Structure formats: structure tokens, C-alpha cells
Image (cartoon, rainbow, N blue to C red):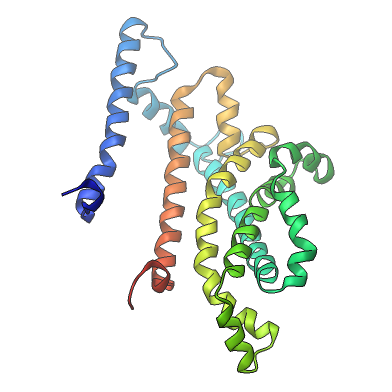
Length: 271
């Protein structure tokens, strides 16, 4: 049987997916052990014991100044910023994307503007945001929104524009107005694409969040990573990076599960 025709079962998928991760962990452990054998004070590749010790203090011991559990305070702050930014961008993508996709005059008027904003590197706008909006939460959330909303809008708009013209003609034949065509025809078919756009935007959203927190913040996962880097505290940086990866995977899996449950027809399910 050719590999292109070979299907992989669920249990085998989990096993095969875990193999590269386990291999990377094994390679890291071997390299870390070698470095510590040559230099017990090495800080570049910390051993698991050092990471557990450092993270335990951040997870379980309250900070002497703030009284907070630093790890959980950082996580909550970052997730709050990410959630607000992603939520605003998703709402904009739904409303503006539907309008651009279904209404040609709107697409002709605002399409070039959305395209122009989408191609501007959002990081280049970071100084402008901090100058205009200050160093508070608004600028951090604003960077996430500006960074991902235009791309999400274009994705949803392109999907709606590509809907079969026959559906729109039939709806109008039955007496549907432009508003009803948008809500009854375009919206249900745009929702799975919107969730897909959210999944694609997760990676860039984390990048913009970490960048904003690194420059101007006093709490957050990105802030903590860039705070301890001056001390070469890889025993904190590596677990924080791994934790960000876990959070991203959980969010992505949740979105995928939600899409499959709410819109099975968009994933090839018969019912």
C-alpha cells in the first residue's frame, strides 16, 4: 500500500504525534547532562530538577511584595489580554468580513483600506500605540487587535465572497433583503470559517502579546520571560515557554472541538 493511501487510527495518531516530542525531550536531557558534566554551574540548559525547584517557588509561594502567586498572576494577566484582543478581533472579523463579502459597494470602498492595514507590520505600530494610548492595557490589547483583525477580516470576507452566487439569487427570489441574505445565507456558512480564522490568528496573537508585555508591563508571561533573561534564568524561561505552548494547544483544541460540534457539516460529517 502506498503511503499516500495509508490511514492512521486515532490511537496511532496519538502515538506518532508524541514520538517527535519525546525525541526532543530526550535530546535535550542528553545535551543538558553533557553540559552539566563539564560545568555543573551551567545555566544555558538547566536540568529538570533545577526547573522544578525554580517553578515551584513561582507557583506555590506568594511573592513577598505583592502577596500573589507570580506564575498564576502572569498566566491570568496574559490570558485576559489575549482573550479581550482575540474577542474584539473576532467580532470585527464577523461584522466587517460579512459586510465586505456580501455587499459589493462596501467591499469597493473599504476593501483597499483593510488590505493596506493588513500588510503593515503590527510591531512597527507598537511605539505609536504606546505614545497614543499610553503604557496601560489598552495599548497591549490594541496591538493584538491591529495585528490579527485585518487578516481575519480578509479571510472571512474572501470566504463569503466565494459563496455560490446561486444561493444569493435564490434567497432574493424568495424575497430576502440584503440584511436577510447576510444573516440567513452568509452568516451560517461564515461561522466555521471564522473559527478557523481564530485558530490561524492564535500564533500571531501570542507574538504580539509577548512583544507588548516585554516592552511595557509589570505582570504577564512575556514580561516574566524578558525580566529573568538578564539573569540567564533558563530554568524559568523554558518552563514559561512550554506553558505558553500548552495554553495555545488547549485553546486551539477547544476551538476545533467547538467547530466540529456546532458545525459538523463543515468538517465532512453527514449529520
